[in-house]
Length: 504
Image (cartoon, helix red, strand yellow):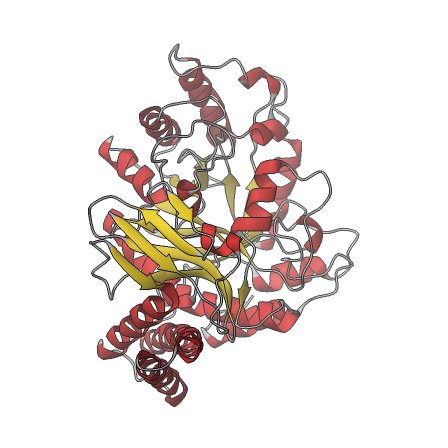
């Protein structure tokens, strides 16, 4: 099946070639197909897809809203035949329909602003139907911006209504990476941490803990654990196993799944860690990014799932009371369409977190939570809410293990690896609501995202990465500047927690 797609800007011209090249298709379950497209000199994308209904995704600038991944899904039915289409019009129509469905659910009352934005989108689409080409494309892109705004408002307003109608979630974990605690050279920063977070992630990377095989150095972890216990802050170990070269000390390079050496080291390493902190640390990210993205041992997809089960088994065999979190990234799977991995095999159809968890589940793996990384997800709030819906099939709580958006525009640091350049300059590069990030916009995004997530009973933990700009993975995504000066976002988070009945 071939789809011929135009992605036009408000002036009636084709978007940039990078934008056109971003277009890819997924099945109705949002699992990407490898991108197979040709772009004509006139800017028409000829996208070849399987003979089944598909959803289209493209990353494009939307004046009045931002620069992010946009979805066109034919109002949930997908596109199932050869056709020509205007992507912006289809995306606006699809999003407007979804907003209508959210409002029709009847569990909240949409605000006048939300309804106005939705009406604008629908009116503009109708105006464009009988207009000339230039006017039609202007109407379509403006309708798309209005529909995206309406979706954000509907999702967050529904979340606020649910929070107001529910009870305080006493066990909810407001977390942060705790690697640099207690910030001895930054007066006041420890107090900011202690005043906002009840949950901290500790660095269990094999390359940090056990550079020489059989000679683990637990002193840094012991010190962190002692301090967090005194502060009354729950801790989590991250990660117990990670097939990324940054986490693999030299002695791991000669391990193989086929000869059992990887499995033996998993058993030894994880048993040792869990035993040492038994009764003190009850949560672990047992494995990190093993859905083809980080596959330093060049394993098959079945072997990656088996390795995940081995990690879970090792944790529970040592301490049946521990909660095992299977940590994943790129939750929407865009990298599988490229196709792109950090280290490992490029398959015809690389796994996404969803398809990876399906394989993990097929093995009968015992794990207690799905770890989701949502750095600058570059999707609107309604799309994130729908993501939460899709993963409900696994009947597991969600821990948002790593997240953050920037407070200003800042490029990646020198000597960044090729894989991280892909993450930071492409996957995590986007805009939301405005044409540039600021401290206020970071706080706005945090407020909407935390509200959306706290309202979902599936979400048990939210971990910002990190408190301090000097340690944030996404540049300038900390809640305090490098000199320790707090940003608006940390005060916004504190006020959110107070409004939900939390106080530290």
